Amino acid sequence: VRSRLDVHRWAFILDLTSIGKTTLGLRIATGSGYCDHPTFYFDFDMPNIMDMETKASDAMQRLSHTTSLLILDNTHLRPEFARRLWDQWRNRQCESKLLLIGTLSQPTVTSTPAQDLAFFENHPVNPAVQLQPIPEDLGSIIKHLDHRVGGTRATPLPVPPQHVLERW
Image (tube, rainbow, N blue to C red; front, side, top):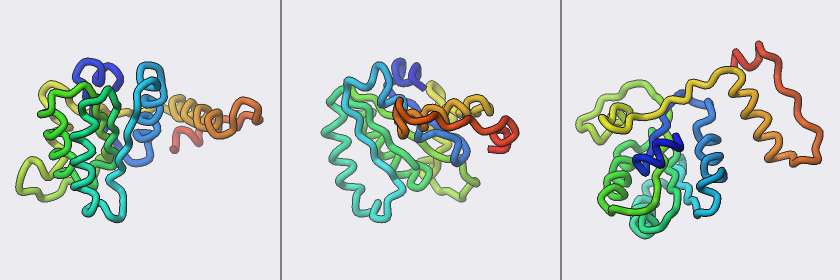
């Protein structure tokens, strides 16, 4: 994902639910290479998302000229809006980087390509990234979150047994 952001200035993470997509996005935002730049996070899973479209579009125009990382999460809930924001961002010839995050969902009936995430999933130059974590990755996520929440002085949370990680 980081290399896609470096090469293309944007990346799209598309995978199953509860697999760590948002955690990965936030970890990238706080990791080396991005922690010195502001990050702006917009979650499409908001009760008043329809009222926020104009504000989000205006913010995208303002922030695209910065060296920020812009994260759009839960784009599967409003794929047509995600596509409009991506188009707007791309047309600005900006310095910022854009990370879109979405969940694979059942195919829906659409009337235009902008109404689903297939555009991003099958992009000819920069297709969506699927995480496909293995059980050991999930154990690492648990350790990372435990360290972030509990700090360095707390007793570390034990990693779940292998069979639990495999079921997760």
